[in-house]
Amino acid sequence: MTHHFSRPADATAADWRAREAAHTVYGWQPQALRSPRLFTHAEGSALYDQDGNRVLDFGSGQISVNIGYSHPHVLAAMERQMRAVTYLAPSFATEARLRLAEAVAAVTPGDLNHIFFTNGGAEAVENALKIARAVTGRWKILSAWQSYHGATAMASAVSGDGRRLLSEPGVPGVARFNLPGLWRSAFNETDPEAEVTLALEAVETLIQREGPTTIAALILEPVVGTNGLYTPGTRFLRGIRTLCDRYGILLVADETMSGWGRTGAWFAVDHAGVVPDLLTTAKGITSGYVPLGAVALRPALYEHFRDRPFVGGLTTEGHALACAAGVATLEVYHQEGLIARSAERGAWLLDHLRGLQDRHPCIGTVRGIGLFTCLELTADRNRRTPLAGTGPVPATLSREIAARCLKAGLVVLARQDFIFIAPPLSVPQTDLEDGLAILDTVLQWVDTLLPGSGGPRNER
Image (cartoon, rainbow, N blue to C red):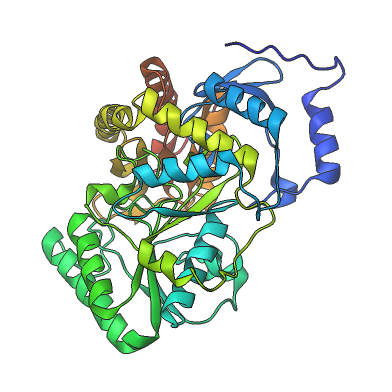
């Protein structure tokens, strides 16, 4: 299905930017530095700008558009829903909300059978932690230093990375632990099994010091997202489940990025066979077609609210149009076998990214699972020295890498020393190959920034 969009003859890129600068505000960047590309339409794994240039999206719209852009099955379902009812007050039922709750419960791990819908991932985290505090009567939350859970008050407070500092002083009662990971071990270990053992021991020590009867929940990303795509692993996740059971702490799995087939399973916890008490999700639940998030909870937690209200309602909770998009999106996952495809294409991608690592000394390590992969850049691979901000290399290196990729026809997510490669699960093989060729060329430029390389060559 091909769409053709026209624009007024006088609507130049400069016109758009001037109009936009006059009225719009963008997140996560200084307004003076923004110069966003205008895209008029998108199909599959590609975006098209106002001049008709095709750009591959290996960021999947912030890890959202898992099924690809403009899927006709989802668009048709949304049109049908719009002609019926787009929105009702959340106290009323709609067929779309019922069907989506059933569809989500059918694929979530274990007995996570009860679904509360939100507007996005951060709100899902907020409400999951509110549920945990209400059910347990406790107030503290444990979270990982290597984490990001959203930009709202509680989600930001339980995040571990520096973005939380923008919201401090925030919600009190948060204590943090380190995840295992040998590339940048917090435990000075070189043996993977010993690393996990030390990490679990540290979490239990933290629980004991904070007071087990004060801790409502432990929240973590089963696969860390924008903090470098670390995978804590099966033994660690199972160990955390054991610790939570031992001390009566609820386990919250934040699957906002890692869910919906991104890792080659429906949810990342499935790889470890772990069932959390609450699971938060968003993004891929509608493939980003309409904003929607969700909290899945186990029956024991649901029963707490059978005879008492859950004080967590949202005006657009269970929005009919969003839920209809979600139902259709889940049908696409099933019908097109996208979960298995993610695992298959992901194995190919990881192998070829390691090939790039062999050719480019700027790549320190490659991490990934399914179509959720990451390159970590280093100034010195052996010493694991960070690249951005080292010597003459600007701290804004990631912005320059993303800009060069975009100019060449590829969208990647880049942050600090990380380049994330996460195309839609439906990405054609030819697009995968073309995207990696562009990335290969940009990495050649990054190699020239390394100490002793002689510096970047003059470019024309």
